[in-house]
Image (cartoon, rainbow, N blue to C red; front, side, top):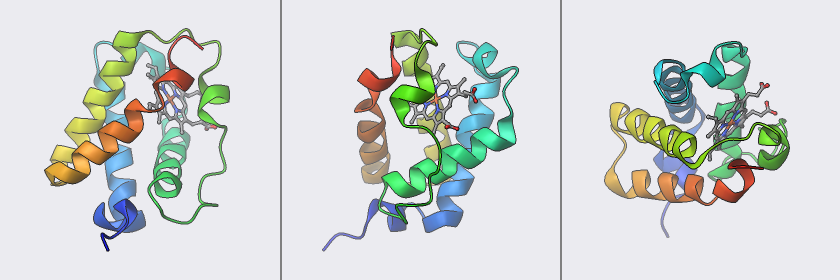
Length: 120
Ligand code: HEM
């Protein structure tokens, strides 16, 4: 049986490193940086890491934040902003030496959340 995506991404430690890098990438991304200018970044990093831990097959109670619709409702996020966030995720996966299969699985899972994030 294939190991869970959680284990293949390096468990809590590996996923935390990736999530921290994703948020750091957002902060300097020309398309979405402005969205994160006044946000508590350490808090967002913790939320992003625990969200990913739970979403990839780690402990399901790790994530204590809002669901994706509630977290992004009223922000009027555009399709290009969504793509920019996916770009940031791919960069972070590459930086952390994650293999192609896992990169594809993460990107596909993120893409699946589009309808809960864009223009909601
Ligand atoms: C699939 C893509 C995305 C995922 C998985 C995701 C995930 C998350 C998570 C887990 C939180 C924390 C919620 C909480 O603390 O309760 C969050 C907050 C946030 N997201 Fe996203 N997000 C995505 C796309 C986007 C996009 C495209 C933008 C805008 C460019 C965005 C902007 C924000 C902002 C600004 C917050 C912080 C809200 C606050 O603390 O007031 N997100 N997101």
